[in-house]
Length: 344
Image (cartoon, rainbow, N blue to C red; front, side):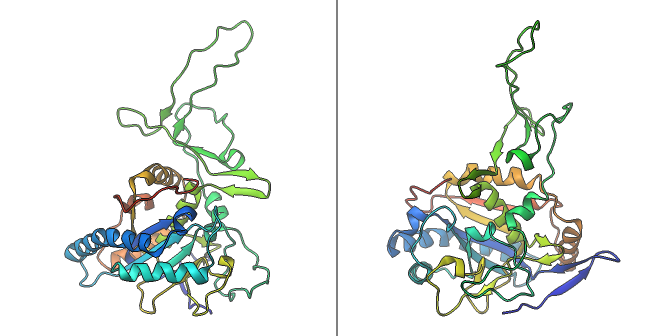
């Protein structure tokens, strides 16, 4: 299925495709393999708990928004990257049925491995099972290419770049005191320091990937950062849209890899991407979301894309924070007996 494309002329010689935008994207669950094996009652309880917070967020947006009927879309993210799951034929009906019983409509279902998979150009139909994917880069690689590290003040840049180490931090780590030059006194311990500290430092050093026996394995934090950028409609590959939602097929496949990165569940769903995002999750996910924010603070989103989104928001009477990371909202609430949440 081909999607219509709208082009935006950003300069005389470059064009950036636009994406449909809701006013708010609400993530109703980020499910990992240990919990995905639970019975339907577990998910019914989850969505019932989430519903009260989703309803409050929806009502608050409708009460304060300058438009009469704000566009709100919902989504869930399935971990098919780090764990083995039931087939989509079994798991998807269980999740959708539980959401409906819990009073919630899921508009979009996304695969976490889609954040690491190839960015398929939108003018190419999804491949048939067994076909090779079209040329492209993975979404995580697209984000990696746009990382601009924030060097600490008065440093020489001796630390290798993130593209070599796979580690990204928000300041200056403690220097090693194990070795020192001959005839010189050993240096004492120096604490790490956050670049933009407010009175005291909160230093974060984040692993974006490691190398496994089968190649690079992206971290949860990196894939979650990709996921947020997708929800903002802020990712492009040479100006072209990526991971465009496709309709969830009536005949579900047996293999998760045969589903698109983002599947649209309902026919009348508001657009997947949005000006702002709201993620409802348990407090134990707070460290990973702090890592996501640190990563996004060092991602240079294409200026033409930012200008495009800002212009469209202005046309609707909206004021957006200049930085994408400041358009994210969270509700850290206990959503149920979540245990064994995988690599996080």
